[in-house]
Every structure is written in C-alpha cells, then in structure tokens.
Image 1 (cartoon, helix red, strand yellow):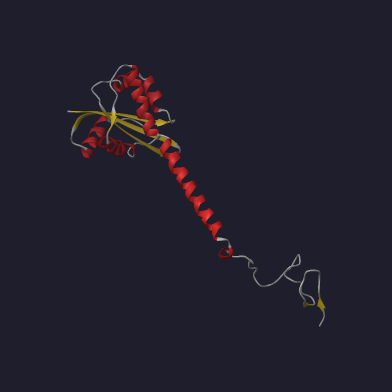
Image 2: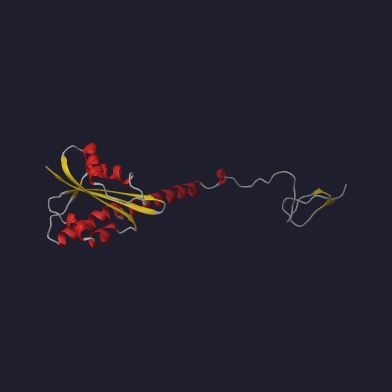
Length: 185
C-alpha cells in the first residue's frame, strides 16, 4: 500500500486525496469545520442587537410617515382652511363605515352611494344622521381630483360637516378611496 504526503498534508492511502488538498471528492457529505456554537458569544450579541436596531428603525420610520389616509384628511383640511371653513375631525365610527364601503367598491364600478354610506354609518354609529360619501379609484391623489369637480368641492367645503372617516384599499394595483363626511345632530 502506497502512501502519499504533500506539504501540510496528513498521510492518506494512495488514490485518495487529503481533505486539505484542492479538488477533494469524498462520497461522504461535506460538513463545515466551524459551527455556530464555536462563534464568539459577542458575535451573537451583535447579531441580536443588529436585528433589534433594524426592527426599531422600521417602526420609527413607519410612525414618522403619515398614512395615505392621514394625508387625505390633511389635504381636505388644507382645502377647508384656505376657504376659511372649519376643519373636520377624524372619527373611528366613520372610519368603520368607510372601511365597510371601501370593500364594497371595485375599481371597475367606482361610484359613490350616499344611501349605502348612510347605512354603513348607521351600522357603525347611530349618532349621525347626515352623511356624504366620496369615492375615488385610480392614482394616489384623490383630493386633487375631487377639488377639480365643482359639486364635490362644494361638499368638501360644506361647513355642516364636522366629522370624517377615510379608508383606502388596493385592488388590482388600483387605489380605492372612500371618504365619508358627516355631522353630529
């Protein structure tokens, strides 16, 4: 039996190459020489801290950027301020009604329905009697589109409305917005 020895190699039987030589082909599966358990505990601590920092940054950035629903309310209130009309306040019950309605509207049939809006408002809160719905399907700038329409602009600036609910949904890469304006009795 012939044994071969290379520089920095251990003795191996002839016809076989040592694990440290290039091109080693062994029918046994390769296993790493270093496991996670052999890593320094400090490396593990740094990995955990890195993941925690990334998660914290995602939360902070998400809180710093207003939702598109908040942006819609801000744009409507800017429009009302510029017309010297009292701003509207967002209300959870109206958000509930807007969420009900936004899931009932499709991009192919994007029409407002004040009767359905009033029913949704009634289902979420019995306190309001007058409700006006706006629906927008398309780009992410519904207030600009509504402000161009004279009839809708008048409703946005109607001083009897003091509460608002907003919902947004995305269907087939199309934004669907529903705004419900209402007043307390």
